[in-house]
Length: 557
Ligand code: HEM
Image 1: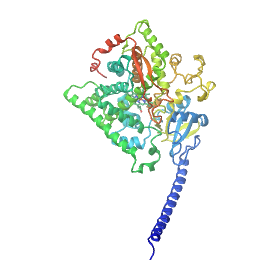
Image 2: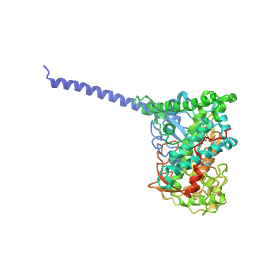
Image 3: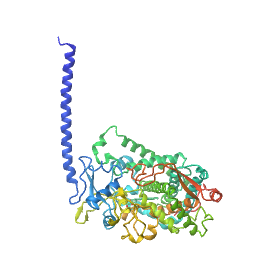
Image 4: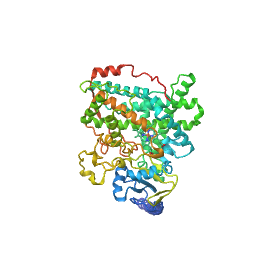
C-alpha cells in the first residue's frame, strides 16, 4: 500500500509538470505575439520620417505618459521639427515648430480636417450619446454643427452675450469678496471661476444659469467633465492603443467611462427638459438650443443638437477656468505685474492710481486696455493649458518635405513647443536657463521668442502679430477663441482692479512643475489658496451689492 505522503507527492509532481507545461506554452505564445506584433508595428511606421523606435507592444507610450509635450520638444532636437512616434502600433506625426505647424495645419488645412477616434472616449464614454464638435471626425454632420457653432460664437453673437459676461464676472468678483471675507480668509478661486465659465456656457446654450459653486449640479458637472478630460487624454488610456487590454474583465477604466457617460447624459437631459418645458410655457430666455428648436431651419437633428450642447460644456468650461486658475496663483506671486496692470487700468479709466478705479470696469469694453489684453494673451501662451492641442486625422495623403504621410494618420500639434519657441542663438538648456534681459529688438522672427520661459505680457505689445498657438490653427481651430479672449480679459480687468492678490502657503503655478496631473489633456494647476485683498473695500462692497445674482435681461443672438 502506498503511504499517504507518497500519494500526495505523486499528485504534486503531476501538477508541477502540468504547471511547467502550461507556463512554457504561455511564454512561447507571448514570444510569438510580441514577435508578430513587432513586424506589424515596424510595417506601420511612416517611411522616410524619423522618430524614436519605442518598445515592443507599447511603442513610445511609456516615455510620453506624463508631460508629453515637453518630451516631444526634447525629441525634436534629435529627430527634427516633424517626427513620428508610435502609440502602441499606431504611428503619430508630431509637429513641434511654428514653421512645421503652419506648413501642415494651414497649407494642408482641409487635409487635416478630421479627428481620430479612440476606444475609451469615443466607444465607451460617448457611444450613442454623440461626440463634441472638437472630437468628431469630418463629415456632413460635422459641417452642419460647425456652422451652427460658428453663428453662435461669431462677433455679433458675442456682442449680444455681454450682459451675461457682465453678470457672471460680477458674480465672480462678488464670490472672491464674500468667500475671501474681504481679504482675511484664504480661498481657492478655482471653483468660483469654474462656476463663472460653466454658467456662461449654460446660459448661452440653454438659457440657464449655474448660480453657486456649492450647488450639487455644479459639483456633478465638474466631476464628470474632469473624468471626460482624462478619457480624452492622448497618452494615458493604454487600452486605446493596446487592444488586448480591453479584454480585461476587471477593467476599471471602461467601467468608469460608462459611469461618466450615464451621469453626463442625466445632467444634459435635465437641462434639455427644463428648456423644453420653458419653451412650452413661453418663459424661455433666448439661447442656442431654443433658437434651433424653435426655428427648425438649421436642420440639426437631436444628436447634432446634443453635440453642440456637449461642445459648449466641454469646450467652454475647463479651458477658461484652468487658464484663470493658473493665472491667479501665478499673479499672486508677481505683485509687480499686478501693480502694472492696476496702473494701466487706472490710466485706461482716466483716474489717478491713488484714487481707485471702477472695480467692475466696463463689460462692453472690447480689450481696449492694451496691457490687460496683452496679459490675457500672455497667460494663454505661458500656461498653454492644452499643450498638445486636440489630435487631428488626415483625410488625404500629405506630402511634407518629400515624405508622403498617408491618409488616416494621426497628427499632434505641439502648441507648447510653438508657444515656447526660442531662437537658437539664445537657446540655453532648460536646466541652466537664465532669462535674457528684455530687449524686443532681439526677437528676430515674429513667432520665435528670445525669452519664451519668461512671463512677459509686453511681448504682445511689442509683437502684436505674433502667432498664439493655444487655440490651434486651421479648419478645426477653436470655434470660440474670440469669446474666450474676451472672457479672460474681463475676468482679469475686474479681478485686478478690485483686489491685490497674495499667496497663502505654497502656491506652485509654474506650468512645468505645478500641474495637478501632467497626463491630462487640459492642464489644471495644483490646488492652492490666495488672499484677495480689496483695493477699496467700501467701493467694492457697493459695486457688487446690487442684485448680482439676478437673471440677465438682454437677449442672445
Ligand atoms: C482658454 C480658452 C480655450 C482654449 C485654450 C481652447 C482651446 C481649444 C483648442 C486647442 C482646440 C482644438 C483646435 C485645433 O484642433 O486646432 C479647441 C477646439 C474647440 N473649442 Fe476651444 N478653447 C477655449 C475655449 C473655448 C470655449 C469657451 C468654447 C465654447 C464656448 C470652445 C469651443 C471649442 C469647440 C467647439 C472646438 C472644436 C472645433 C473643431 O473641432 O472644429 N473653446 N479649443
